[in-house]
Image (cartoon, rainbow, N blue to C red; front, top):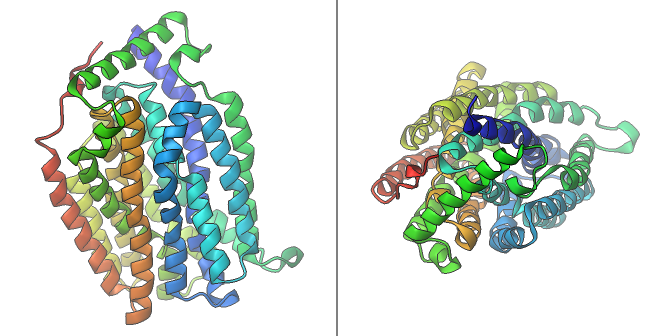
Length: 421
């Protein structure tokens, strides 16, 4: 085995499983509210409008605090900053058990988004410190399978916790928030001891492996700086950054606009119990996980996944039978989620240094406006029309627009992939 292969394999085995685990926990705390809604509708009289705004307002906290949080990570280091984020968001997530109405729901969801704002873009930035671009698409894809895995594990888990309704005087949704918030706190303390900032700090690598990874990442950074794109103003003034933010806005608007309502949609059209809904809702994301692994190995573009996601969203809008409904959600999940690892390889190909920290966070912030608009629009439109058909068709149309915007990126991308060992 060559030095290159040995070094990348060790780094992948050490970092990606752990980052995968903590992102599963993070994502579960973000979306478990979609399962809680199965009881919040009755217990707190939440309409789809209240739920959609509350589910989406998480993303507004993300928008406000994303860039400063990522700049702080670059300054203070990934290990301490990511650990702090996890502990704070775990406490806030568990505190969701105390919501008593729409106002407290909105406030805690906003605070949860603010706490988690630097987490995902921080990990993307962290990976640029360890892997050059030719390896990063694969590692990012492996890491991002945590998104779909969170649904696979979270569906049955959340459905099961809802069945604890009445135990020890707590509602099922209270058990859900409490039980799923605690792991983030525990893993925050583990992160402090487990993560190494950069290859030079890793005593689990041989000296020549540390030197190789450090040199590869540094060589790519120097090339990006030669091409331009290392200062804060390079990120804020880059048309590519803003275009990527718009594409990410569309992906999150469509993704969350559908995802947050999947359990409610499934129960409405099937009449299944909370646990059965949790299990059935997990099925599409099992297929999405497999699709993301395939992307990690083979690569691909963004246009095809966006169009598959659009087709699945339209089918979901009109499907009435459980089988067609799950097929539709599966296509939507496979399309949207398999686009994510390809997407996140793009900004790190032309940004470095402070511009990378700011640019990645800016893209995430602009995109997360979609994370608010999508669920809020779906909830309001469903209450107004009495059906999910219209909002889901609109979200599908957004994905088609997004696939067209991707074409504008193709001629602009610089060839950082020319960096080789």
